[in-house]
Image (cartoon, rainbow, N blue to C red; front, side):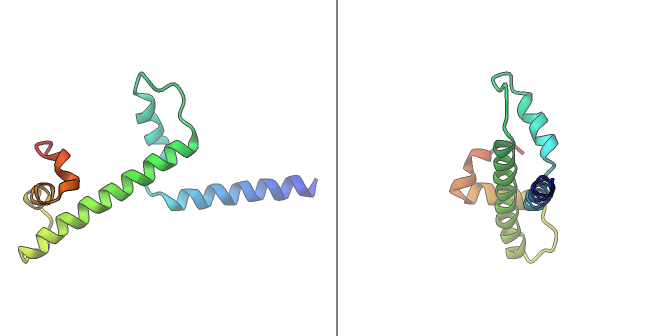
Length: 99
C-alpha cells in the first residue's frame, strides 16, 4: 500500500515539474493540434515538445526584435522592430509577409 502511495506522489511531483517547464497551456495546445483533421491522437510528450518548441521560437523572435528596438534607442518593441528582425534573420525569413 505504501509503495502505491509513493508511486502516486512521484507521478504528481513529475506532473508538477513538467508543468513548470512549459509556460503555455498544454490543454490549449492539444486542442489546437486536434483541429488538424490528419491528427487522430497526440501524446502528452508530443504536446509538451510542441509547447516547448513554440516557447523557444517566441523567445528567439522576441530577442531578435528587442535587438532592433535597442539599436533604435527605444524601450518599446513595435511592429516595425519585429518586421526588421524577420527580414534580417535567415531563420525567420519564412515569416516574411505574415504580419
